[in-house]
Length: 503
Image (tube, rainbow, N blue to C red; front, side, top):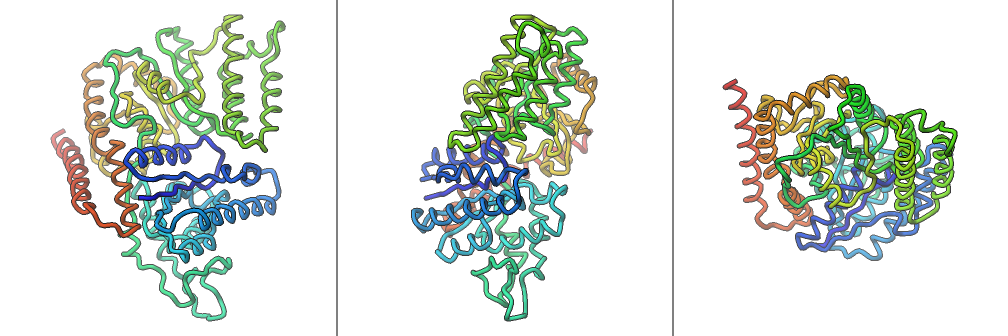
């Protein structure tokens, strides 16, 4: 099967969305499919992507950049991609950085392409834009999708509710097009909006794949009590909780636990600013103002000036990551030189897959607290679980229904009721697990069960393949495999319910 993966430049590089696309590209290719991952940067549009992400420029410049990106991607697909290729498009709907409009999609459909959309966080994030804006923007696009993949029931319910918004498009005035944005060319005036039932049949719930493993890799049974936090290093991603825990460990004089911050910095100036504040908070104040070497503030300012000049480079991402690693190396060398009372934190930026595996196997616990918490698109949490870490995270309404009725004893991780835990709560949770060996073993047993069923990367890939085949109207063993999937999830759910009733 020929597959083209695209991602919309809604945000800078180094996000979970990009990581998902790259891992799915690899998984699908390993399964024997012919896969192409198309990004705007590869068409020489690095400057336009930078403008599309820059919130400081005029909106007219942003929209011009977005139009050029969309037009260029469309032209490339129409002129170089065979018509029997399924277009696997990743959407963060709606978002100002989205590069395909309904007009672009209508031309792709008119040319005969089949489209499978991965829609991420459509309904679970209600901060911006407003619900009306969200429904309006999404409703423009839904009719063009032959199949839809999303991660959780909340997004699925939101999409079905959006499909009820027929008044946006079903217009009786023959002088008006269905979409007032002048973007509707496939569906003519008076055509019925797709029925909700048909849309429901086209939506599949599939978890995110593990990014760095082909199967569950529990690693060594005996590990140091180190703590690992994995993901994009930026605001609202659990950094405050991690920093406060590190300070508490330092205050208590506990030298046997190191916190390993593993991930990437969001590759734009906003991401660098967030990373800069984290670095200033992590390394002691007196490190930045010693008289015998360059002040930390000045050093960071110089690095920031260098990064600001990278916006026009095609290799922006690699250069950006190199500069962030350089900052950490400089600081660590100064810490070694002067030996101040530094916090027990290590930074590991843009590490290889093998290095990430090693870091996980050198740690016992993982922590991740944010508004998403543990859910089927929390790929950072699933990745840590995939390497045998006991993860401590937070509950949210996006939790997989399989785990809704599970007592704590049946969960594959530890879930707290807050997105901003106090350092003392984290400390007590970790030391409870350190002392209670049977509790740790129980969690690891539950972890192995879900990582070899629900979150098994080969199983996830097979589910995606079946959906892409449906988009191409390919009938194979989908029905039989879907029944096996239902049996597995029903068994997990019934185990949790039975355990809950016997407590």
